Amino acid sequence: MKIKAVELRVVRLPLVTPFRTSQDSQDERVALLVRVETTDSEGWADCAVSQAPSYEPEFLSGARAVMAEYLVPMLVAAPEVTAARVRKVLAPVKGHQMAKAALETAILDAELRTRQISFAQYLGAVRDRVPVGVSVGIPGSLAELIGQVDGYLEQGYQRIKLKIEPGWDVEPIRAIRERFGEDLALQADANSAYTLASASHLRALDEFGLLLLEQPLAADDLLGHADLSRSLNTRICLDESITSPLAAATALRLGACSVVNIKPSRVGGYLAARSVHDLCAAHGIPVWCGGMLETGVGRAANLALAALENFTLPGDISATARYFAEDITPPFVLEDGHIAVPSGPGIGIDVSREVLDRLTINREVLV
Ligand code: NPQ
Ligand code: MG
Image (cartoon, rainbow, N blue to C red; front, side, top):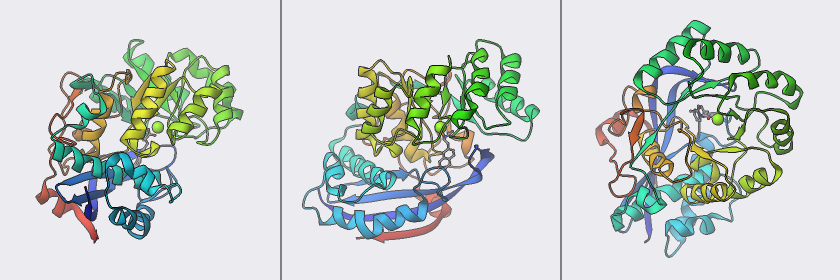
């Protein structure tokens, strides 16, 4: 397979509700889409960068630049490209995992569309639908939070994840527990908002029976997470820290977490995500699939990944309607707390050209 061209599209999707984490707030998703044209097919990917480097070091215009100036020319120059070889071809460029992951994913999509194999089948899925949860941003008030959680539970979401930060942690978690009871599957995500100095404060969360506490400390603080893991009863889950299969292996060896959030974009693609999954399975560490406010293109591929055996906790793969009134693919819908795994070739869904063109704010074609 040879790469003929790569198209980069920046699309703007308004969010149905603003989404605030401990790090920033957004009311629209400005997404970067990659379309690869090969000698016999085309493939799509959602590059999970955000506009600003406020969540991950990578960001939208940086990803566009590294693709245009380095990654795409390297792929176009390669005599033969398969998804399995992308990592090696791009290895001379350091970092830029999300940009690399998007290119690998688009190439994998093209390859699988040609071979008429779905992502789910290729990755080794064991389910045709996956249980899903919802991530609830930091709202303006407790009443607002309770109203939002109530609405999501009404829709059938199987677990609730609350975004927390210093000053918004014990109180909202207690309020949700009291209002919705002990059986509610509840977890919290701090997006690195604490330091180890908060260990005794975070111990107060132990009484709420959370499924896990996600990424309390800085991304590079594996030792801090290992210390914190020993002083809390609540399981620590890492998200931002898990930047590769090697980072996952290091975290497990150090005892920095007992659950892993896998985001394919963050670990370097779906092949690396499967490696992290396999590694965690071998260590008896459960995993779940994280979310990056993906368009339908990214959501489709994440559903396939979440259908693997060791994804035993509900992922942050919500229905399209939780984020967007309109998406560039047909909407994914919640049925009985699950979303169906696409079964068509490649990512298994098609992009609506009409919606795509209407929402596009920038387009460049690289050859
Ligand atoms: C998390 N996701 O688990 C992230 C945080 C997050 C669903 O909670 C643009 C790009 C917007 C990345 C918003 C969820 C984002 C983003 C939130 C990541 O930590
Ligand atoms: Mg997280």
